[in-house]
Image (cartoon, rainbow, N blue to C red):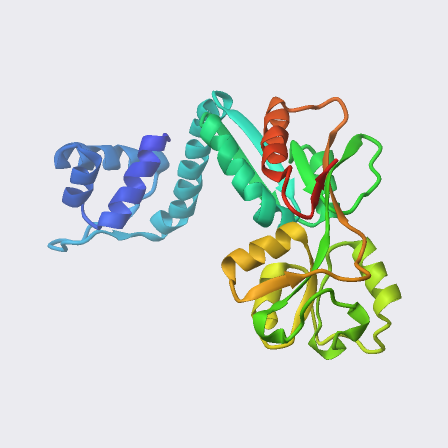
Length: 296
């Protein structure tokens, strides 16, 4: 039993007759018929019904049983065939929290790939805890997080900090420097940026009721923020990203703002990927000088 036998079985089953299958496999019809007969003899079972005068071949019960095995065999052979290509290229696996991946890393990774097209770069998005787990388990080479967690073998390095802004729509009527105590709690859209932000919100706003909307990502909050009077707090990069896609939004300074959000990069101790330095340098060039952001 070979991969060619599996492909023959799948092709005949798909085409329904030997003539079309032979054309698909680039062999003659008599040669394909002989190959099928030999295969059935080897298995000791008939795979197709060959009714007299019938134009279409149909699978026997034995043929139907063998089809899933043939499909798995073909998939496995394709995966094994990819190993040579995998070993011949540089792979760089990056994890990031949602807001950093979308609002910051996408441009940096594109710039990196323009310089290093031979690198297969894979970016996945998780929360901070999952990013640490991915680096610990060596699923990711490097990750970008907004919440520190303790892992004995992982190095956590501050990358940059960014100012938190009040994000709202143009028609909200808010102007100048806004005092958060003057905001309407019923119009708040809570985005869980990190534990520091949520503690500040609890200690500073003193809202007595639960918010109407709480999300874990800015993209989910955008439809609400476009409603008149709705507002949310957002780090500078997320606010800039939101305004780029929704020009009717704007951000305003706050008189008593939340602490700046710090973004960290993490990697396993003693396992430094060469691509990390170049990606971090691209990030530095893109971030330095931007309003509301301080490179650490």
